[in-house]
Image (cartoon, rainbow, N blue to C red):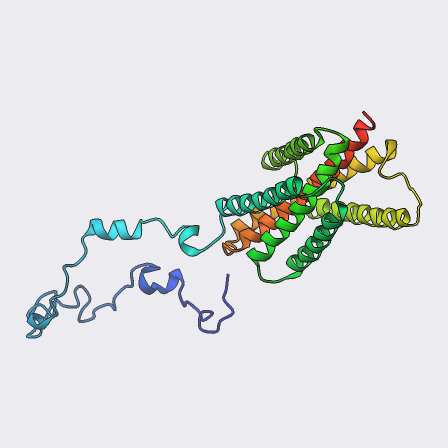
Amino acid sequence: MRSSNPVFSREGSFTRESGYAGFGTTQTPPAGGQYATNPYGNNPYGNNPYANSPYAAQQPQGEAPLTDAQLAEMYNAPSAGPLATGRMTLDDVVARTAMTLLTLVAAGGLAWFALPERNFGLAGGASLIAFVIGMVISFKRSVSPPLILLYAGLQGFALGAITKVFNTMWPGIAIQAVLGTAAVFAAMLIAYKTGRIRVTPRYTRIGIAIAMGFVLLMLINLVASMFGADMGLRSGPLGIVVGLIGIGLGAFFLSLDFAAVEEAIAHGAPQKEAWRAAFGLTLSLVWIYVEMLRLIAILRGDD
């Protein structure tokens, strides 16, 4: 392709026809010229005009020149890896996600054992503060690991308190919800890695539209419940359908997280971005867990 640079676009510049710097054929010396066969043919010093130079003995005596084997080892050495260049790796994402989830679980355990039953005040307050911090993290340009861990702690505290209430009403529901969440995560990871789910722009647009509609519907249901109206979205057959849609949306968010992590690694994102990936994965898992908890409660009913 012809360059737009006026220097490089000159006729014959840096092309095979120019024979520049070994990129083309050998230049033919002028016919009948003085040095047609050997430019040093008539030089009294032979082929090397500097062989007997009086300055030859004054050359600096540095280290011995590199051998061919050393040069080959130097130029064939592997390039610097992600760890050396500070780029994000999959191991970074796994480690940060594990730290975030462990913080969440530890805070949940604290609420489980420290709070009395049906204490919704502290759980609601922690959940509200966690929501605000989550919004700050989502719109903040720079990554803040302390804020992410603080979100995980507050969210875990709220989930621990709520789960204790559910487990009192339906014994064993906590472990069922945890296992169900883990099953959804594993299924989505396998489906994504095997190519059964492909995150395309169309797939993303449709999923986001459904998610926005779902959230809007839940907000309307929440406002209606404050005024004593029951839309039946969290009970009975309709509640089961809503619960399944909620879990499906959580799985959709996971697929977006997987694609974002893969793209960030491929483009050499900074290592600190692994915290943002961990935050996204934690959000999706929390969503799935809450929807799983509600769905199991509906399915178990009054047993």
